[in-house]
Amino acid sequence: GTGVVMSYVYITLLRFRAAMLVNIGMCLLGLGPLTTGAYFLWCWKKDCQCWGSTGDKFTDGATALVAMLVGVTFMTISWHLQQDIALAIDCIEMSCKAVLETPSLKLEPVLALFCRGVVDFGSIYVAALILTCDLANDEVRKREERWIIPPQSLRQIFMLITLAFWCLWTNWIITAVSDFVIMYTTELWVFTGGLTRRGGPVLS
Image 1: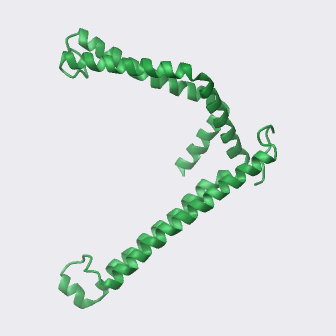
Image 2: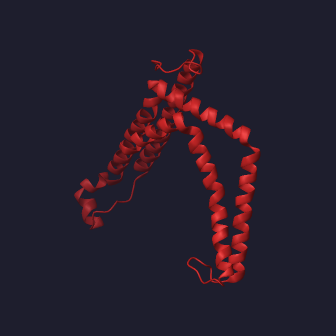
């Protein structure tokens, strides 16, 4: 429940603050290696007399050099891809706008997760019944001497294979239905003016 609520909060933040979140993330990805490189460079100058040092001056220097090269390279690439990043931010904002304005896209992940949970837990329960069905036989229980899974017959193995196939097949059906709901709802949202409309949910 908490994960679902937090995901909706995150989608809302992306809808209205996507540029800020993306830019902060890009800066952190660039500053992280640069900071690490600067720290190991400081350790190299201090003859490895610092916390986190590898203990070898050459390794500290090599780590600092590699980390700073990674940071500079990432920052350079990010600078040259500013237009592409801006386009990606617009796409993220429009995607989140579509989710927030369409009840179907809001409920689809929860319903899909619930259906998968029912199928998976049901399959595990049935598999447990198949594996332990012979324990109800007193002779089998005495022969095994312990409450463990007894040897499986060919019929039980066939039933387990069939159950596994059914579980996978049903999960793929859920995936197909989910994809259809996402695509149809998104198309309906676009063709009813979702890209240009300001506010107002679409009942789809």
